[in-house]
Length: 368
Ligand SMILES: *Cc1c(COP(=O)(O)O)cnc(C)c1O
Image (cartoon, rainbow, N blue to C red; front, side, top):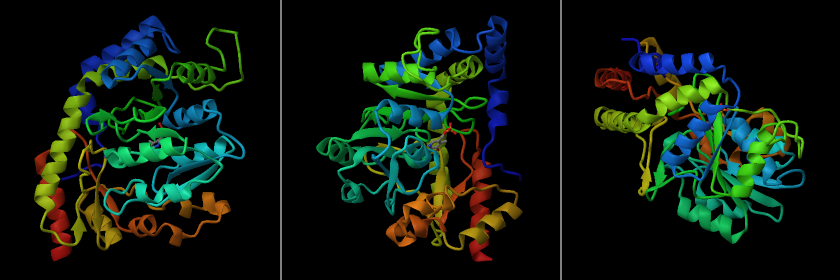
């Protein structure tokens, strides 16, 4: 049995008519940049998400950059973020001219350890970017409190956590703004690069929309210099066709996580994902901690089961951040876990038979 890490093909086959129709409509209308398909997706995402403003942009990296630029973050500032994430979270901090400051991760939940955040705050701190990694919300009570007390902007990187909640509230709505990626493999994925910003702040929304479109809200009226980072019509129409299915797909992911738990429990060499009380984990990734991780991954590959590691090197340990002068010992949890974490195949279309095969293969590895 061949099991890919992500399977975008099955979902396309199941929704072929709607998606092909969406693409054909955009081409027939030649509504490639801006236009009604982009506005329609922004409006439906805003409504479903419960956000006042949705600003489509080119991808989930730009959305972070645009937000920080429009919050006035730049040279001389520090932005605090988490030691384990995709590099977008921290590279965009550097791109504004600010300095990324990393916080170690929680040993159970793998996202920012909120108890270590306050110690990283200095007089130069301007914002905190938290990442709801793997689809599980951070402790938003603690983190919101700290940001309020120290007057820091709270930005949520929701690239892996569409419709995840903390205490029943959607992530992305706890601070000044949230950033989303619609990269094809994300829980809500386009057929190319796409992203958006959500915020309830009118002034910030207008600035972000302007900055993402060359600093102009009206053609040729450039109030500032901006960048070119727009959601395109084709991606917007595809996202609109997929959006009505998101809750059903999320439910399937959560069910599949439960099925994995069921077949994997009892294997003492691995630790299963731990759910945070009060959080709805939407399982963008199903991550285990495994003894002899690299050998296990290789064994699974030999059984034609594709796995991945998110991420093999914690951000402060990357050559890109050597200039910050951190040592791996400052991030003991992230540094240890980068050798133990393993992401197993996870998508709504994954079947129980496939999960059972993966679990049996893992069991065989440790028993052989
Ligand atoms: C995917 C991802 C991004 C970047 O999104 P792109 O759309 O690929 O630019 C940012 N942060 C995290 C945590 C991600 O997983």
